Image (cartoon, rainbow, N blue to C red; front, side):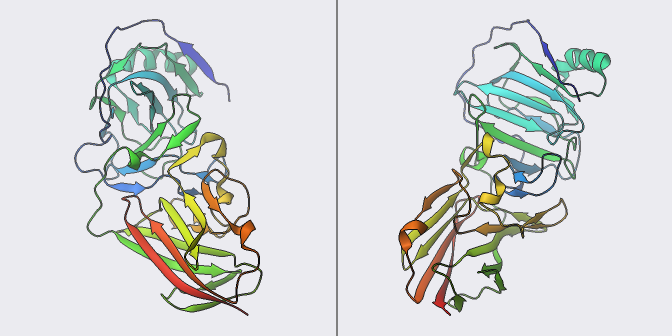
Length: 325
């Protein structure tokens, strides 16, 4: 499939004022997927979810808003790509924001969108704009919700990226999304050395090697939605030995998902079960602490504490004991 790059030279001189980010959906936005979640399907293969999803009540045509004053960087027109129709803005603070799965774009772009689609049809089209060409005010619709690309249903997919778009950041670190009252933390299951267990606080579990290979299926549950975590810290006898932090992910690690999740993980648009891997397997910048190389052979009995932090920065603690077989 060919990619077409079209550049428009019109320049609009508008001063960009500093502004805090607002939510890209009006009202009280509901988080339906978090940053860094496991994604197991799609034409790019298994990958990290590089943004946050917000509900539009499964409706297309809901206005998607510029989260701050910004200049248009590019428009991507593509029904089939993973992101579908996309708009990217650049803000005064240097950050860029990306809005995906749009059903249509802002009416101020109609002339350009109609022109390129009439010439190139439904092929993938990327329209790059010169600096400071099209300006969007905070809260102005940049487009409308949809399910273009690989969206299972209409919603708002929103990303915050570095100026060069080499790194994606957790939008929940920039925008305050309210936590629903019915949100509950859930420990679905626990795997130790390939054996699956029901988690019970304080229970004694067995391990057999120099150190245990632990993975946990944990999440926040909101109605039928399963929301991934922001971080997990694992302590052995109160010593921090492993720390996964999903606050930011380089785009070149988009597909490095098996560094954090096990192959037991499933995400197909209808079911979600993600197993966080709390032991070293392959390199990733997402793991901030890894002291397994320093552990040597663990004592025969180990107190384990795993601190799980959700999207809203609330902590939940798992505690259990390991004994060597």
